[in-house]
Image 1: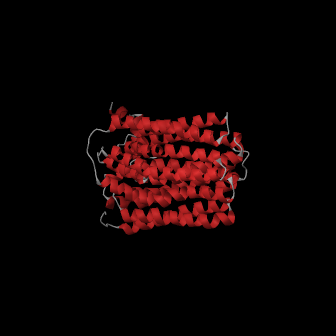
Image 2: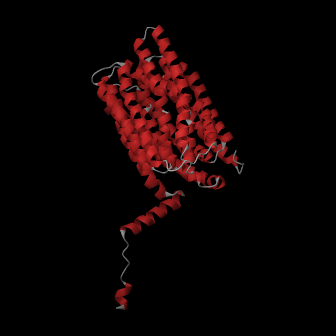
Image 3: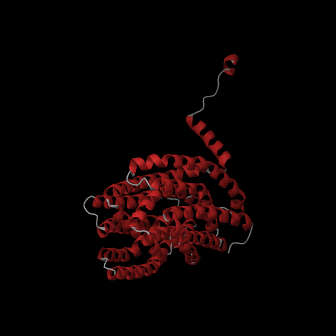
Length: 431
C-alpha cells in the first residue's frame, strides 16, 4: 500500500495550473496580471468592436468616395478635434481620479463646466462657417454650422466614460463607448452608399453620436452616482490638465489641417489612411495603460517610481516584435483593403515605428494620479511643441513624408522627456 501510495502524483485542477501561470507572468512583468486580464479584456473587447467598425468605415469610404471627398471629410474631423480643445479635455482625467476616490458629484459638475467651455469652440466654428460662405463654399459652411451645434455635446458628455473608468466599471465603459461609436460609424457608412455630400455624411456621424452620448450620460448618472460627495480641487486640477492638452490636441490634428491647406484633400486622404494602422495600435495600448489610473491613485508615488522603469523596459521588449509584425503586414493590409492607395504603404510603415514609444504613456498616468502638475505641464507642452514645430517645418518641404517623419520624431522625443522627468522626480512633494 505504501509503495503504491508513493507512485501516486497529485492531480491539479486546470485552475491550479492557471494560477501558477498567472503568478509566473506577474513575477516576470511585475504587474497585476489578473487586474489587467479582467479589466483590460473588457477594454480590449470594446476597442476591437470599434476598430472593426472603423476599418469598415475606412474601407467603404476609400472605395466609394472620391479621394477629394474623403480627404475633405477627414479635414472636417480634424477641425472638430481642434475646435474641441476648448471643451477642457483634461477634466475627464480629473473626474476619473475623483471617481476612484468616490467623489461622485464631480461627474455632473465637471460635465457642465465642459459644456460651457465648449461653446467657445462653437463660436469659432460659426466664424469659420462664415468664412467658407464668403469663399463660395456653402456645403462646408453648413457643415461647420452643424459642428457648432453638436460641439457642446460631443466631448463634454464623454466625461461619463471617464467616470466609469474611475469606478473600475470597465464592462459598462466598453459597452457605452463601443455602442456610441459603432452606431455612429455604421450610420455614416450606410449614408455613404446614397450620397457623397459632405454635410450629410458629417450629419450622419455626429447627430446620432451626440444623441447617444446624452442618453448614456443620464444612464451613468442614475446607475453609478451613489453619493453627493464633491472634490472642489478636481475642477482646478481639470483646468490644469486641460491647459496641458492644448498643444497636445493641436498636434494630433494640425497635420491634416496643414496638408489640406498646402496640398489639398487628395493628400489628406492618402495620409489619413496611412495613419490608420498606427493610430489603431495606439488606441489598444492606450486602453491598457488607461486602466492603470485607478491603481496608481491607490499607491504612493514613491512606490510607483521605484517599479515603473522596470515595467517600461519590459513593455518596450514586448512592443519590438509587435512593431516589426505591424511593419511586415502593412503592404498586404493595403493591397487587400485599400488598393486605390498604394502610395500610403511606405508612409504607414514609417509611422509604425512610433509604436515602440507608447509604453511611456504610463508615466503621465502616474503623474496625473498624484497631481504632479509641473511635470505634466512639461510633458504636455514640450513634446507637442516640438511636434508642431516639426510639422510646420517638414510638411511644406516634404509633404506627406514630412508629416510622417515629424509624427515619429515627436513620439520618440516624448518618450525621452517623460523618462527623464520620471527619473528626476524623486520624492518631490505633490503640488
